[in-house]
Image (cartoon, rainbow, N blue to C red; front, side, top):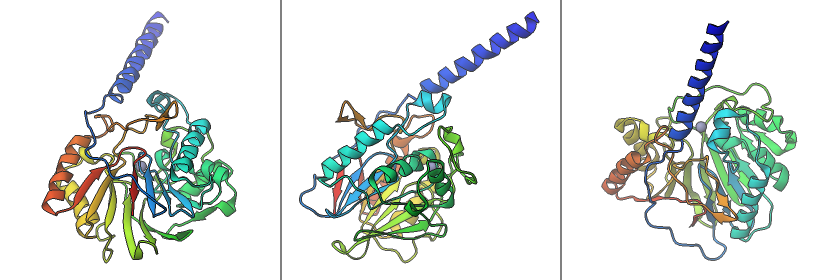
Length: 334
Ligand SMILES: [Zn+2]
């Protein structure tokens, strides 16, 4: 009995130390200062406000839509040790700040969801219930929406891809792949009821988004690649000026993979501008006491952003492409 008790105490202590060490490592960030800032926008042009991970708000002065809209950004301890819920106050604060900065009414035309991991999909049903519009995503994302009681008429399942018409924007969902990070794969076959552990949100299908708007021209002008994965040839025949390039986990992958990713997303689309996204630690809030917080790179345990950034910088010089890292709340105008 005594031996059993001692063993249990030792095991509990070891588990606590392991969780403590993990939490510490997940809060150790590489030093990184984003380089120059993009110019602030003027007027009612097509604009994009970046919100960490692959979350973005787009507007043309008439309608507003989101990519993902993941604003809960739970603290690392909660992600490790608890089941997660939508942090409603935090999500609403961020959403209201978005509408304020875009000078747009608090209404959404829709939300396109990149894949069903919690850092992309979790807050979309809540945002759609609050601000209207449909959620566009895979069957796995539909299970997340069902778990939050989103009415069926506010969800459009895009299993094979397709086009979301969001005001005058056309956003084409293209089947792509997740970065090979070790957290990939699986489908949600049941509604994901909250609270749910981060690992309960299975990837489902991963999409890229191709954005068109008549004010920018008849052809697509931007490609959004939320996760640092690709399907060889997925962008065949596509030409865009701008790529929003996800880098999450890229720094841990080999140089050839990073070169192939760049080739597929940037060289093959003949893009001239690349903005890096999904490079940040999404356990840090976007606002603190109403003020924007500078994003930090993902912890070293999960990524090596300085390494992937150096490689991408090298490719961008070689290919004469303008490369920038987007900080939270930065706006890009088209
Ligand atoms: Zn993911």
